[in-house]
Image (tube, rainbow, N blue to C red; front, top):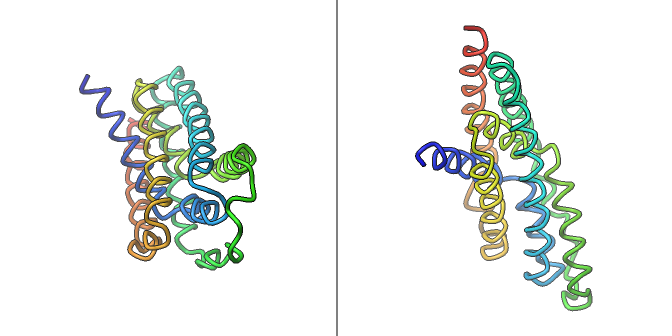
Amino acid sequence: MGHWLLAFVSAYGAVFLLELPDKTTALTLVLSSRFRGKPVLLGAGLAFALQAVIAVALGSAITLLPDRVVAAAIALLFGVGAFLLWRESRESDSDDADGAGPVNRDATTFVRAAMISFGTLFLTEWGDASQVTAIGVAARYASPIAVGLGTFLALMSVTVLALLVGRKLRAKVPAHVIQRGAAVVFGAFALIALWQAVL
């Protein structure tokens, strides 16, 4: 039970901290300004559930390899995650103005709004640092359900916060500070895993 809980908390905490200042939050804000909250939430839920399953499947497949190869793969995944985070933290925050003017939120049907939300959020998360993180956590702990659930709930928590709090969320949390801090932590995880691969 302790191992399961550790896997869940690791996945939830890492993905939540990564997604809080991420482009997914900004995209959710844009979607919520165009559509009603319920279809956006449904589309996000479907997209993130699928992303969590894919990440856990990839991470679980890695664990079938020999221990040294697994440690090297984890080091690579966390190293890539650290690089992606550091790079994103250096990019300018010029995407804030992408939500073009007010839109009639009731003009689009529920199903269409949910499908647009699903497609855009699924594609945005593909290859994202949080997906790489979920793969790494799934490879580290042999608890795919815990990691998948933690990843999914973290993504949904950030989405709900973005829908409820709106633009104030990004104003209170400097994105580059969290991203660079997470990049340092990821770099440390990568070095630890690399050390385990070499020994």
